Every structure is written in structure tokens, then in C-alpha cells.
Image (cartoon, rainbow, N blue to C red; front, side, top):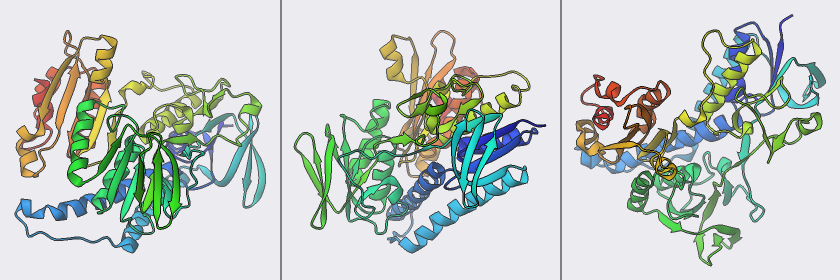
Length: 452
């Protein structure tokens, strides 16, 4: 009899594990209480990026004259935008469901908990069922963090999941949180014409990113009229009349028509029975080793609940690695997941992407590095696109020339970073990039120039 893998949570990690294991003869049962494809993926990531794309189209219409076209003013059709977002998510969910079913994965819509180390109890519309599991993967994702000092109402005090799209586009809005999610929301609402205030707890947006990267984004925010409230931490949000009042710990306050919380997430591990069977947890996250195993050998965790990088790409790769373990190990050379080499992107305008070693991190540790930087304004394609903002920065080892990391700010940064990510993963040298024959004219030419 084939081993049975029971997966709790059908997001990117669960789906990747299910498809990879099922194709190799493992009996797979996947349990999802919300939506196949993952709530964070289909309720957060895809809708937000869809709306950002629409906002970018609106921004383009305002600058058409600079491209030699007659300027046009676009207005938001909330009903049409809602239909667009729903259409994209429905299509993706359908594709994922069809793929899983075609591979023989049993899908159960319901809630699951561990009854014992090898038994998963499922509550679904058809009743209660206990399923024996040779292996278990917990990939239940996360949800927006809501601090005790605020009560979102889904109307004017919003969580990120109340914004896809909002019932109305706000006249003005305060975004609390200047990390990745916060700056994306500030950019999105500004693109749609809202007056945006961004509460920045540090002295720069994106405090964990390269200061030069943050500076380009801040410049664009100021150009768009976004107000940056630096060095402030929100401590209360209240509805007062027809306004939302955000009060900060330094005495400053902001009055806007709406406010949205973008201050991180918490793992969905409550009620799963994990601690009762002895799984080691820390702050709600399942503690895992480099094989994504918990302290109980046959119970794995992947995605946001693992406490590693909260990226869909990382979750998917973790899921695949779990499936490899379930089938007895990879066929061929094995490479452990190196989270330090994961590429990430921020879908603002301009886009931001990075991978590998950061310049500030290297200097803080005293490591010798070579840093080369080329502005997009030196490339023909950026001028053709009428968007010369940003740069390519490559970090390499001065002794060996091996590419250690890089940052890109500018159009299509999320796509271009893949070249540097491949170089970092494969230990390529800057000379490998320099001698590559890239297309002309193309933004990628800046990669070769930065490698010189």
C-alpha cells in the first residue's frame, strides 16, 4: 500500500507537495477550510497585485502626453474592477483544483486537527472523519495581524483583506505600516487618486531594505503627494464623525476618511491539536529543521506557519522538498533550501526586487564586497519606456568574482531579479553576466553593465 500524505492547508506549499507526491505514487489527501489555492495567495497576493496593475494603468493614462499621445483621464469602475479581481482568482482556483483532481488527490473542504500523531480528524459538511496519516504536512498559512488597540469594522477601519477592492475608493486614507505590504497599499491607493498618509515607524520606508532602494521609493511617494509620517507608531484608531483618527505615540495624529492596517501577519496554527501531540511551537510557528520536519519526524510544516520567509515561492519550494522526503529522498543530487538566496519583490512603482547578500548586511559583518551600480537612465530601453527611474546594483566577492546578491529598482524589477537570483544560486561570476549576450534595447542590459 502506498504511503498516505495528509496535507492540512491548500495554499502554495500544500499544492506543490500534493502534486509532486501524487505524481510519484503517494496517496494524498488535502484538507482546506477556505479556498483551494490558499487564502493568503488568492485573498491577498493575487487581488492586491491585480489592483496594483489597474492602478498602474491609471497612472499611465495621466502621463500619456509624455509618450506623444493625447492625455486621457481614467475613472475607477468599482463593479468592473471587482469582477476583474474575482475573475482572476476564480480562474486560478479552478486551474489549481483541476490539476489536483487530475492527479488523484482527494480534496476535502473542512477543518482539520491532529487527534494523534498519525490521525487527522476532519470536520466537513458531510460530518466527522478520522484519517490515518503516514505523513502530515501542516501548511495552514497566516492572517493579518490585528493589535489589541484597534477594532477593524470592514467599512472605514480596514484590514488588508477588506481592500480587494474596497466598497468605495477612499477620498483619503492612512496606511499603518511601512513594510512590504504597507508600501504596496500606499502606492495602490495613491494610483487610484486617494490622498495617502503612510505611518512610518522608523526613519525610512522599508526599514529592512537597502537605504538607496528606500530613497527611490520615498522620492516617488513624495512626487505622488503621499505624506510620510516618519518616526511614528500608531497606538489607536477610532471613528470620529465622518473621519478616522489615527493617534501616534509621539502625540501626532492623522484624520482621513479611511485607515488600513498593514502591520504583519500571525500563523494559523490555533486549534490544530499540534501542541497536544508534542509538536514544538514558538510564538505560534512550528519549529522545523532543514528538511521542513518538526520535532516529530513524520510531521512537516511549510509556508507561513514554518516561520521562514513568508513568500509564495518559498512555500512552494518547501512543499516540494517535503514531498521529496515523503517519497524517500530526491532522485539525484540534493540541495537544501537556502532561505538567504530567495528572491523577493515589492510591486510598487517603480518595482523593487532583491536577492542574496545585502550591502548593509555585508558592511555590518565586516565582509569585503564589491558593489557595482548602474542607473537605468543610462539604458536606451528605459528612455524609450519614458521611465528612467531606479538602478541595478550587484554585490560580488572581490577575490573570486562570485555574485553574492543584488538589488533592482525600476520597471520589471521582479522579472529582472531572476537573472541575479540564478547567478547567486548557481555561484556564477560577474564575468558570466558580463559576457552574456542580452537583447538590445532591453532593460536587462543594465545587468551586464553592472557586472563589468
